[in-house]
Image (cartoon, rainbow, N blue to C red; front, top):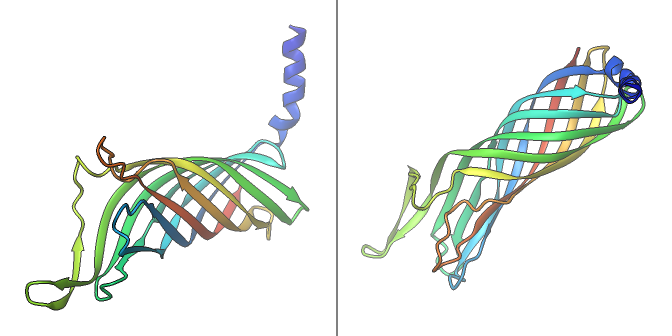
Length: 218
């Protein structure tokens, strides 16, 4: 009984401060596609910009620690070229729905505070499109194309999981409102393709995002 009362006494200051907040975010991201090219040394994979946006909620346990959850739409794009065949240029657009769950830790003054977020995320690959220039060897001519990439169950792995971390600055410009700017990094631990025993063809996304958000603090 004494132990229970002691625990409650320690938790009371945290319960008294506990505060909810909700908000929205948007920004830009740069995706790095990690692939083992094997013997295909002619192929080049380039980083490419995309867009990220979402809704977010946070439960502040104390004035410096909370739990943050988001539902984000994030693009993980890349570009595929060939070094010896310059007219081949594929630009991929990949849309993901992501759910980051993070611990949020802040420090600083009443209005201007720094913060960092650390946690995990899960995601789902919604769709993929590509456009660019290709070469027809039969006619020896190049042509433009734009098409949807169809998923194949035996090849594509659409569920994603990984680690996420970020750091930024928050400015509390009114009693219930705050604005944030954050630099965030997503590290995927799941290959976008299913790997067989013959060819270890692992492919991963590594994504850096710069985003701004606005909060309403209850």
